[in-house]
Image (cartoon, rainbow, N blue to C red; front, side, top):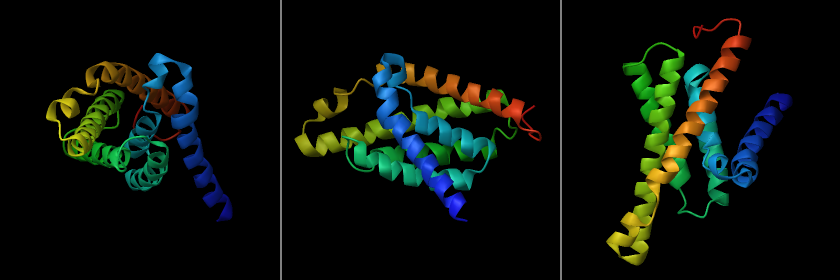
Length: 172
């Protein structure tokens, strides 16, 4: 029991350290990579959605401590994107294949950044009262292109590693 709890705490710490410490110093394409979002979408898609949501809340709260944005932006973006992707998966995309995980990762990244942008815009608007500064102050399209490519590539790599190492998976 103690070993399982220690492994889960270590997993949370590794995710937070990768997102906050290692990826930002690697340079432009890797600095835009949403490692936490990609890991949780993959985990919720292939392994267990309920566990992924629980750990997304924990990691989201820890990431909020290191974030310069308004409290709740990362957590809200993670939860909304994972919930919408799970609903889309259960209602429309029912098989666990590569194209499904690519579509879900693409949608999760779009939803995450849209929710994050709306939340950041609202916080900026209510602080400054200036609609245009809050609306056009963020470079969403520039960041989104790099993030989409990096997230989809990472989830594709994870999918291939998982399908090669897992004995029983419906992904093959």
